[in-house]
Image (tube, rainbow, N blue to C red; front, top):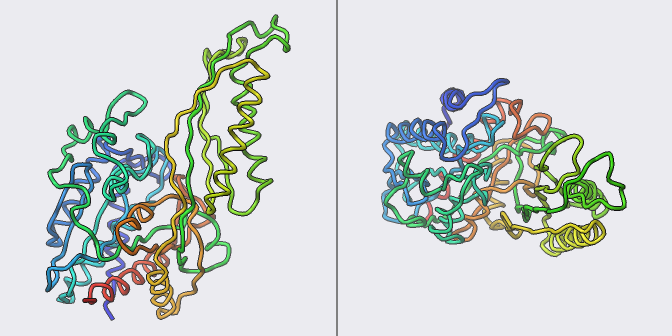
Length: 408
């Protein structure tokens, strides 16, 4: 059995984490920023050192291909290297760098595979700067057009298209030109289940559906001391009520339903003025599409009811909407088989976070491998996974990729 170079994997994670490093040990490499460009350049350099044939497509996705003995669709792995503003060092990065270690192990052993082996990193997976999230893989899978993606802007009005050109990653290839035989994404769990249960490998069967909506509320500014409560048209009140309602709704529905009001801003944002403008977001997720639709309807009904009572106007803008995804059952079984063959405990589970793998399922059989996140922390500078777990997950990936790359 081929063995991974565990020291190289951990060293690569440390080096990439040094780009965009922030206090506390985390990273800030927002998509298409200067830091993202530097991270891309580093990883592309490693791909070239490993002898991979590089392809950069028109949305900035990068795919490195190790040729097989036959000209067949490749077995692909990968993830992303962009982060949120207060991200950790493992989210996304681990899956990409573990993929490179799969290639290194094959190279060092002089193994030739029947199928090519490909390692990819996708643009703007996080959606922290541009919406929707998982943009690069969505375009790759044909779920979003290039012009629509290029037109997406950040809070400063900079567009995806312009920023791709600026950092030099608007490539010539057509997104999706390389259609994989199978896609496997290795990732940290980003949740507490594996760590709490002391299980080494998460066998991911599905990804929750995601609904992101931004609401803008228009009321009337007035003096906070002289305006009676009954006469107020308070945009801030509606926003605050939704924050409370969304949490109560998730607890009422139970199961896999979660709800988050993650951003909120008021205007004029003064202590003694009733807000005339509020902008906030609602993030709803569920593994069941009908339950997700129910949650969306309940939030919308609450907003309509409070808006009418408070005499404020509301506009809504959908930032992202993805239905739940079920991964390929046969490939999921193989993940479990290879983990158990290494003596690693497994747990079948859904993913609460969105991932590029859910987009790639549109093109080919897809599965995911999770390793534990200590204390369930992610999107946090204290995000951590034990080195032994990082190596174990990468070894499962290597063994599965070798098997898949040998198929006719």
